[in-house]
Length: 467
Ligand code: SAM
Ligand code: SF4
Image (cartoon, rainbow, N blue to C red; front, side, top):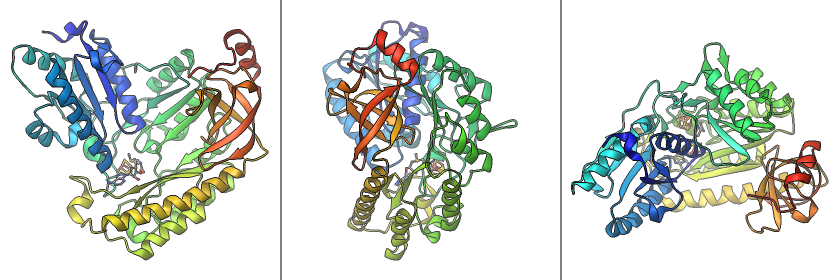
């Protein structure tokens, strides 16, 4: 069977983890569709189920294993090829090949081009009553999938990966081992992709990379790229994630502070507020460097919202060192924060050099304390918007009620209003007057849209907002 003969085979893709994985699933969808496979949302009818996995934290890993055991039941009822893609395939190839007979194929993040071949091999073997493990897990120094147009589902936001891999080797992190060396795409491919996306009706682009602000291609750095994407006609908003605090030259801060289409939000992962722990984590900045960067950002434009990632209970973290992180949250007053309990990952520097010696109950207590603190701060931060009118990009129905619509403010905060306020469609920018706030949501009265969105709404939208 040649790979082009994927015709009529149905493939279902399940995605775990970060936005980069969502983007990779769009690449895989494109690669399989062009070889004749049909990508289906219907898992029950699929000939092939691919799980695009994440290995960053223990819970992501556990979720994938739970899912695999569900598939065992399904595989007993009919012929089915099961594949594991992405970071877990890369990191746990031995474990998955030796101990997991359910898995028929494995493809790491740099091997998606080989998928059609791997799938056809696995199907052929299965049809002949054999079981092979089709495997492609080599990391590449060059693969950026620059020529592949991701098969995106329709929506308001489109992701564009501008670089892949990471060279930072933070001691807790598995990414450099699962996604390989850092490499950037050329700017032209990215700008062409942004123009295509705008033509397809997407209003917002999020530039993605594990260390997105270290982007470099010839004399293009990340600030230049960000501005060029923001200038693409039809793009209303540009975001980026995740930047590393070490790579913030003035030109990048100025672009975020002043360019009208670059969102006033920076996700600035701190990980810890203590210098000894930051050193052990190999983050390459001190608490002082980080605080100075926060001050610089806020002095350029105080409306820039900051969010962060924190790890609690890293190897040997004392109560005093944990208190430094607690105080960092009090000092910066982030709009929101992802707070993680440290989980040791195979192969990382921390797994090799340090002991994961903080008892689980202490880690949990520290996470809870930070989550409670951050919740109080997020409410205070969000209450600062009361009485203000914010431009909101409409995304669709609110999660909890289809009588309400939801969108995102420039600072990336969820805003909700009653659909009876007006007939706006996903992709419209609506002026919302904020009258209430919780830790995660602003409640608003939608009062006006842009000229453009009003004209469009009159023709194509009732006051039902599509999701
Ligand atoms: N590149 C980003 C940066 O430099 O911060 C982060 C990318 S990582 C995919 C997302 C977040 O997962 C990290 O910021 C970190 O807080 C968390 N993380 C990574 N490894 C972890 C581990 N072993 N245990 C707990 N959290 C972890
Ligand atoms: Fe992991 Fe550090 Fe790279 Fe972020 S910068 S992906 S935390 S190694």
